[in-house]
Length: 224
Image 1 (cartoon, one colour):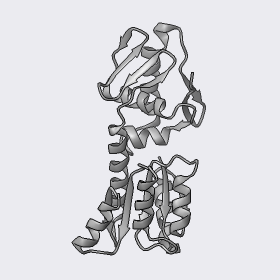
Image 2: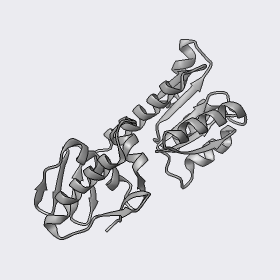
Image 3: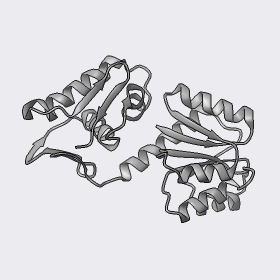
Image 4: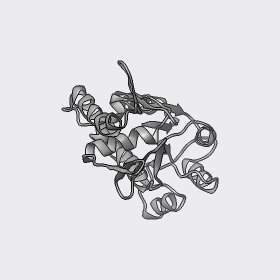
């Protein structure tokens, strides 16, 4: 998962970056609102934005409002010390998807970020296609040409993740985080077994090779 953190307090920013990297996420950190706005509008496809409300240059709530006005739909978690109901309403009306009061528990922060990303992914209902392989997230069905392919729930989620990031490396950490919700008891060979099972169903019967293994790194599906 790719996360943009906008936090101007250096110690907190460092703690957030370290904690999110430790769970396997790719993190960019900026220290003011204008940098956050520019980064979120840029070429990097962030999965979640973590914005502090009281940013210098442009408040986090203003960043969020301007991003929504610009058509950016990336989920936003707002960090704030403001505890009144009107303040929380202001943040939500600006387009924030969730908020977390300071001081906060890091485990809760990570769980909320995961939930926002999962919700955004679940709302994406356009079919994903590579060649004649089509995955329908809404119906949870997979076809290769006219042939329907039966996948388990885990296999479907793995294939959906790989197809949604076609052309990009998907690490084992990313699969662990997004398909198994970061369950640390899952061994990497379990992921390999599931990917092998997906291959056996979507490729082997059709003489194709959709999923590329990048040894020591993860997997990639190349656009057709």
